[in-house]
Amino acid sequence: MKGAVLGSPVEHSLSPLLHREAFEFLGISGDYIRQEVVLENLSTFFSSHREEFDYFSITMPLKEEALNLDVAIDPLVERIQSANTLYQRNDQWHLTSTDGSGLIGALKNEGHTKFKRALVLGAGGTARAVVGALDGVADEIVVLGRTSTRREVLERAVEKSEFEYLRWNDSPGFADYDLVVNTTPAGAADLLADSLSQGSCSLLFDVIYKPWPTVLASRWADSGGSVINGLELLLYQGIAQLSLALNRDLDELALARHLRPILKKANR
Image (cartoon, rainbow, N blue to C red; front, side, top):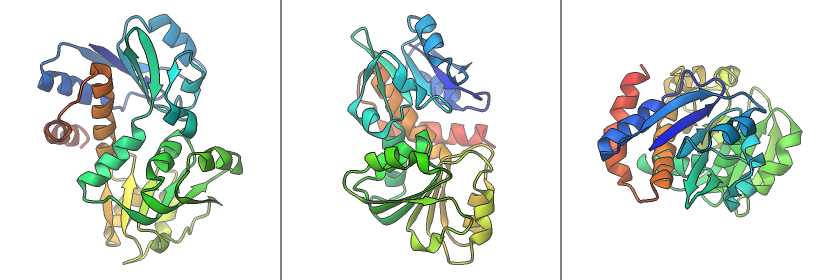
């Protein structure tokens, strides 16, 4: 078994550790590497190396570019216009996303299965997967984005929940939401922390895991809110990727229990 995480930058990624440790835990012979691939170079890399690998993890900034590859595309990916996984099945490459299922798995592990009003910070590829995953799980989904050009594709990812798109501002009114998901790059949401006050926040899921804690996560916890680290998303979406690559069900809870302390130690 051979896999790789593709994106730029990827030197900080803990995906190689996660997948290698999972291989060892499952008794599988294999390797998993980091591969720097910049925007617009994904197709060239994939064409040149597709025969050398069994699966790829796709990270920023390639989650949207991956849809241009000549592969079988999951209907979910068509809907959310974002992908994070390439895997082989019967000599055919498939493109899908496990970001959404990873988010739901991590929330479920913390005892959260339903929300009234969710706020998603950011409007990129990860945000699209998050919005698609929360569709029907949150009664209302609000996205805070910097450009209105992404509104339409985000709205198409929602079929069951109410949807609203707001332009970025530094005082989004966190008290109005029972879930906030930060999908922005490290540092992009730091100024939002200034709008927090004691008792004004409930649950924050920050998809960033390095550097940790983020300014927003630290201030959120200090204000009495609950925080889920981005390592949890990495963990659950990674297990789902491996399950697809192996074409078999895995004991998600057992793998998560084994891998979580390893990832936390490496992320210190």
